[in-house]
Image (cartoon, rainbow, N blue to C red):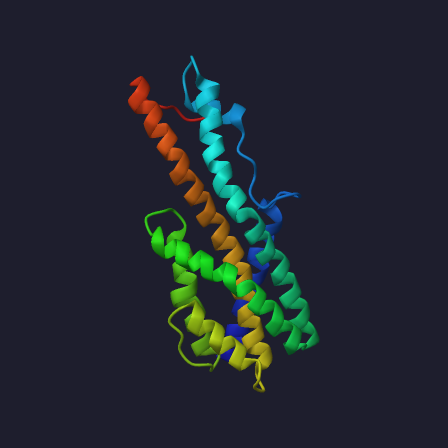
Length: 209
């Protein structure tokens, strides 16, 4: 069962790596909101004014989270290197550096359950991660905090590499699910601009071409 767990984790790692490499922009994780493109939602006159407001609220959300998502991506690489070297001290230090970002994702998802992507974040921290730890022989965990404790404790036993693998994948999946969640948060904010446009103009907003 443990070998099956490790093979499953490695498969997830490959798939998520492809997603990460395929969607991340060179300079930032989240693509910049395109005013010209989004102006297609609105009708003249004032379509670009509305589009600028639309993108401004999205960018506020992106700016809040982009560097944090980048920290998770960079941290995943550092954790992978520490795991490969069997350097559990370096692994522990990096994990504790990344834990606050994952905590913030979990807390924000709990407070915004209705937002697209929140369910995936909560599923990761409150179901998937605990299940992997249980299958790996580290005991049950019901949330991120208890899962983190299991991983850190697991670094001190003979199967430390199994606990380390679970942690590496948790960070990578945090970045992937977190990215979709942040897009959902940004969309929820920009939807308020669309609603205001509808109320002020009496027009139904369209979709960008």
